[in-house]
Length: 271
Ligand SMILES: NC(=O)C1=CN([C@@H]2O[C@H](COP(=O)(O)OP(=O)(O)OC[C@H]3O[C@@H](n4cnc5c(N)ncnc54)[C@H](OP(=O)(O)O)[C@@H]3O)[C@@H](O)[C@H]2O)C=CC1
Ligand SMILES: O=C(O)C1=N[C@H](C(=O)O)C[C@H](O)C1
Image 1 (spheres, helix red, strand yellow):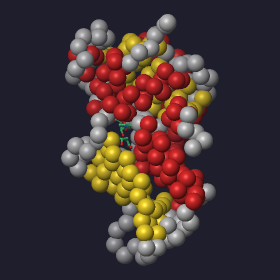
Image 2: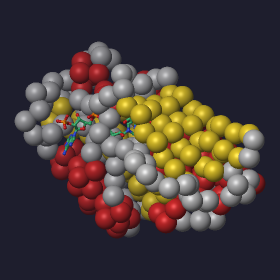
Image 3: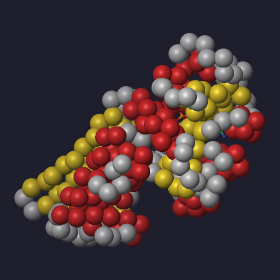
Image 4: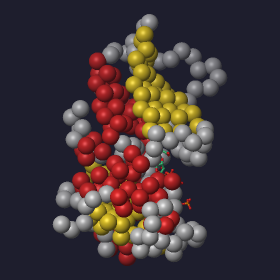
């Protein structure tokens, strides 16, 4: 059987190294490229040595074009501007683009949608099975409980995280809004400070904590009259995201160009 040829971009990052390891350990795929930013000190290093898996004979380079041309898919946990640029290249090469990058804005999502006319894009704020299952549960609970149950999404991440709320918090907020049949954009409250006044019924609130080495913790609260329901996920190891990304790439191999999510990959779209 032919193996799916995968490239990791942002190879030196916290997730980049996990992805290299996950590809090396997975069946049905092989690492054929590793990309880092121009000027990075890891350019020229072996990707396997960089990720601590042992020699893989794949040199980290700063030139994605020839690497994408020889690949079937790319795993991308980098930064929004880089992801938009990689999506255009993945579309040109007609390959699978798995996007874990968070902090993307509306205009950037529009560019990804355009790239998905030619690429097979799988994008999710969280690639783990647990969080995607949780999103389905949140959607159901939000649909069941009325507006007298206030929805608040609380998240905590490590001190190096640069975007807020996290992609996962937004994914869970979106699931709650879908359950309630409201638009998250219109009803989300991203911060509170000073004399805010009382909470508006039906709003979905977000609270962000940052510190230490926390991999990722999310709780969706339904705070009602005299009781509170909390649905939580705690990520203990980044390998859950990396394994999910590899699974998404393998899933996308024989799909038509389009924009897919992890719920499609995991068969949870109807949950
Ligand atoms: N969806 C999911 O399941 C998950 C998503 N994430 C998301 O993934 C992203 C990365 O997270 P993390 O690994 O912790 O962050 P890091 O900062 O550790 O890694 C990002 C890497 O991408 C590199 N990079 C940035 N721009 C480019 C470019 N133009 N070309 C090549 N490489 C580039 C960075 O290089 P440099 O340092 O030089 O800028 C860095 O090495 C974040 O958005 C995070 O939220 C994280 C975990 C799970
Ligand atoms: O930056 C991180 O670390 C993480 N980012 C994702 C997010 O923004 O939700 C996923 C995970 O929680 C780790």
